[in-house]
Image (cartoon, rainbow, N blue to C red; front, side):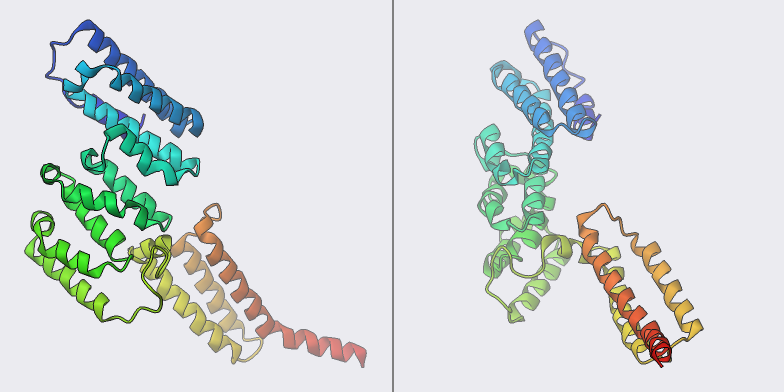
Length: 310
């Protein structure tokens, strides 16, 4: 069972006085939520999972009295989270935001965790502009500032939407405005302003846009500790390649060092060949190995071939 399903089970146990029809609908919605979770996580049947989520949402909408129950919002959010995952798996991410707005009528009424998922999804596919207006409206809606996830939404919007799109003036206004006052501490504000100053002083190589700079998945990897290790290892590989190209051919200790380095590289980075993100690394590694083979052994084979011809 998914976290979104278990989350519903832990809320609202204090409500005891409900009509039989309301309780029956709660049970039915819970059943649909479990089914959608199984179809998505276990069966990997994304189309039917999406259909089940929509049936559950329709069931909630058809019962206006249930909207007063505190479990209504949790069921709705859980079904929407599963629906977002199903749409993303079906490669229908372009329609995610519109689908969510249909459920909540306007972006301002989304729960914080739903807005966070939308920002991260459109960041991953490099289309931050699609969620820009929705994120701005959500952050400036007064009642959302009391949500526990408000600060996280503000951080994601600043780092993954405004900054990649080059909207530096809007980012500064957000940091110094009411949103920044509610979302950031004084230290965080200063850090954000320092980052803003650095970005402003940089001369962009290309006009700001949804695809400017590094791709989202590369940016995300560079922001993690493992990403920094990968960059350092890549630099060391280039250095080693240049050194080996001028090294003495047939140096056994040098080859052993190179082999040990490759093994350490695989252990630390732990490339998974099943992930698309690992394809460039594997390709680069193969190119380096091919180059090293030619540098160390090609002269030997050419010498043997020439001696045979003689």
